[in-house]
Length: 426
Ligand SMILES: *Cc1c(COP(=O)(O)O)cnc(C)c1O
Image 1: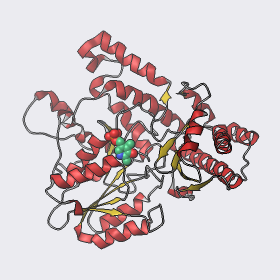
Image 2: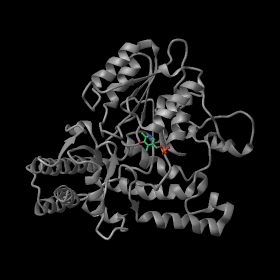
Image 3: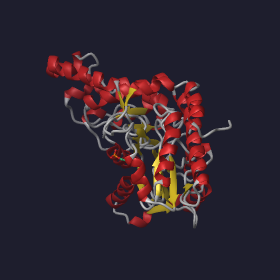
Image 4: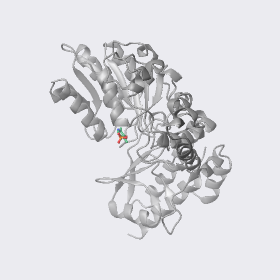
């Protein structure tokens, strides 16, 4: 499609957008005197309007039933998480038994590593991407220490000299090279900084070929890119609910454990009563018997208020479907890329933008990370003052996420206009 950087063209794209009406299902921030252009759904998704209603229902049932709400609430709390499994499974390409919604992301990563990072003999090493999200770095560091091993067991794969992105071949080559010293590959499916999407299937095949486990942090991937975790044979994965999934600040996280591990009770794990056999949960007998599948990794009873917000968000995904979301993601991200390229070309004496994120849509989701050359944080501050909500990373990167469920093509055009104003008023 031949794009044009003007309002009429952007509106035409909006009119043809099959997901157009979904924008109305969300609250847009309105704290600014100007209309907010929201491009930070990769950090915190917007609030689904239905969330308040679902949370209110739980508050009302709590007021009405007290403890009896576990069984008599409209959606009984005892099995509340079960309302979320099927919809979650569709988003990540899993079977319902392979997923559960529970805890928070970093907690889940630790719990999964207890089961899936089991260094033995010379097989002790972990491969991860350089510049992984800080929390993931601390997780790996502390897991290695927990096993009495040194940091040299964490092997980072770096971009090549002078480059920002990591070559898939370099990850695969490192897996090969470590061979039977490799215990685990643990990579962010979409890198939070560059927006690079990794080929999880190829990485999984390579890890398995040398006898290692493959796990992924999908914080920036779930609800953003199309995933087939079951078919790709991924061992485990986890993600948070509050980025592309729009499920409230600090909201509940999801985990995936492949079916082939579902009944493997020999896997070590940190156990809690909610992961125990449902029928026997209240018998309070000794001897932990894990539930089959991902549910067996739950520790605690569900935080129902946060889960209610998550339910509202998941229903929107259910209605839209990941296929349609994926189609719009590719088109709107390409449109934003086009708008930014136009501005970069028009103003090249004063300021230009260098896209870090891959231009190949198979290697990215909806995030574009752009290096601002010639002007730095001052430009970012000027566009913020104009009502743009975006994200700044030192020393000179703006991250922008056009989210298919609620970002319009017109928003992308206006963002471009605000960038032009920001550049020309410098
Ligand atoms: C957002 C994010 C986190 C945050 O973890 P929480 O436990 O939810 O605070 C961790 N890892 C990655 C890769 C992230 O993008």
